[in-house]
Image 1 (tube, one colour):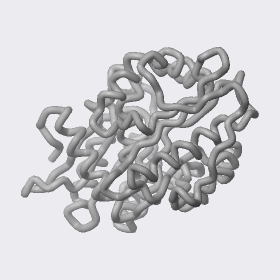
Image 2: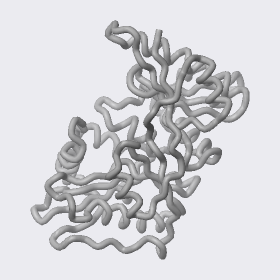
Image 3: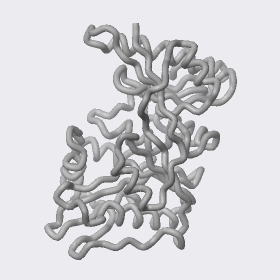
Amino acid sequence: MPNEVPQTLVFAQAAAFVSEMWRVNGPSSEMHIGDLGWGTFRSWPSRIDALRLWRDTNGLTQALTMFDGSGVCDLVVRPGPAGLSAAALALEWAETAALATTSGARPIELRVGRRPQSNGVIDLLHSTGFERLSFGVPAMSRAITHADVAPPATPDGYAIRKLHTADLASRVRCFNAAFPGEDLRVDAYRSLRACSIYDNRLDVVAISPSSDVAAFATLWLDAHNGVVQIEPAGCHPDHRRLGLTRAIILQTLRWSVALNARSALVRHVSTNANAQALYESCGFATICEDTGFFKRIP
């Protein structure tokens, strides 16, 4: 059954569960705590109400969903029969939630997961009418030590440093310019910075000669597994082709080592060849290219 506890506690429990399940699939996992943090707090108000923990009769979390009735239903499942039973209940609930939020157009498309790995979960999805998507969000990974992450070359006139509170409005404007169609808000970013898994030491910006945020990278550290995730990273269009995003990523990876990170993760949309090339230039290699699933309902 899904939880009935306060949502702030749900987020902390969800982060613990995601970190625990990371040890099963590593970089191929459905979710890193960075996916959880960014996916929950990038919106205003936050999507914390979209988190549900599916527990067995002993109170042990067997599955996690992050779904508000639209978009992708992220699904993290504990290995074993109890996890599959919880996943089956979660899928039934997701279909009901998707139908409840539709405007009435039929059929609608429900997407589940980004990169399911478990054969049991894959069989369950197939048995309930889901099919593989033709595109996805590949995972890229690399080991990190201070010695093997190259020192970044910063363009003249720019400075790479941690994000300051006074930078928030400029940071948000830079993100929205880097990703047209997004609508990140300053109040959402303040909420993100207050969440339990955010670490200001890994929220890094490039400051332009005019003192604006020109590029950015936010990393999320899973201290239990020693892995950081880049989510998100980008550059304002007016400052591209200077190597700023690469420089920020390399610098933040070097700082991550001091926080006992041993590896790094990044994901990108499979159709974004430029993003793949950027991360490859930072030493990342593709680990997983599996895709999620979709189903047209009813």
